[in-house]
Image (tube, rainbow, N blue to C red; front, side):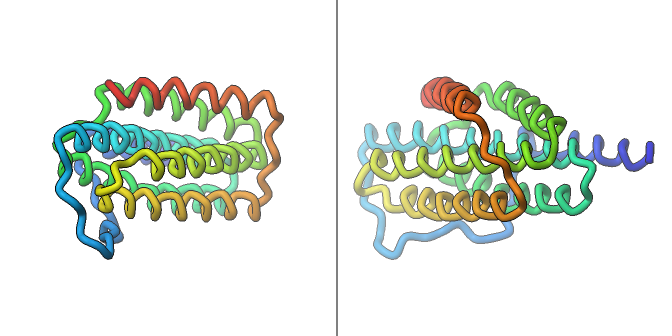
Length: 210
């Protein structure tokens, strides 16, 4: 039992180091738009880069959340569920980083802070029980899906490359929310949802610039 716990902790530490400091490799190719992207102005590139930086931060946090929840649960089946979701989200992490590079933009300088905060929240949710942990996933994915929808309206019209990436991410987040609901997620209390939304706004507002 002790060895198993140590293994899980080492896996969590490895995931953190890979997310924050190693190049992320996607298991699926980055989505490609049907129509050719337009040449973006410097201002449009900067705007798209800021939005994709925010999306990249969201994927850093997703890795932290799922890793912490996998560490916290006592259910082998649920641990496998979280690890599978984390692997799928790593595609998003790789795609958003690739797009940041293409736009000449950088990731958030505060990624270690965002990771630590999300990991703590995921660990807390996991300690409160599997249904609460899944409920946290359900609400997080619902808020992320709405956030990505807003970005589809804010990205430059000619940036079809970023748009197709964000659209695929949105579809994947909706699927993760559905899987969490089908796995027995509880509906979180309204005040908790409000606090989560407020924290997300602080994070995204800061990551847009830093």
